[in-house]
Image 1 (tube, one colour):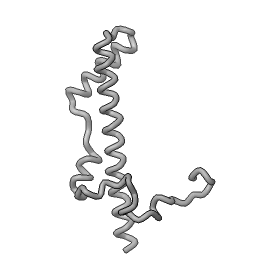
Image 2: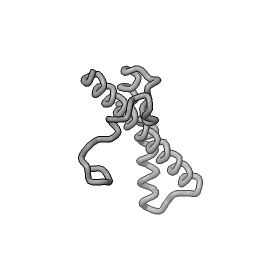
Image 3: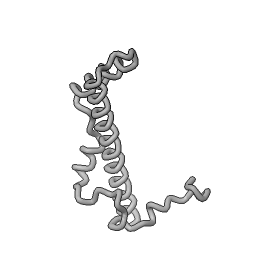
Image 4: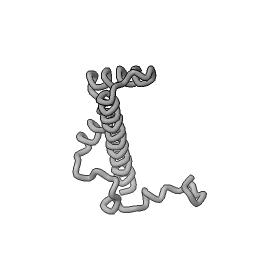
Length: 98
């Protein structure tokens, strides 16, 4: 449900070219690759190490900054993946509706 209590999906009524969240400059293959991408294994391992040290209260100031930077990257990646999936879904809805 949206904020006014309707179960409709107003974003799907907005033309694709008017929706700023859509990644229309990417091909379907690029969107699929982006939607499935993950943090590199080395960065994932470092993130887990820093999170563990953080839970134990053992991070230096530099490590805390590194953890914050990695968490920002994870957040940005999640946003990009979501936008890619959204774009693919909207493209499929448009194709079916045509």
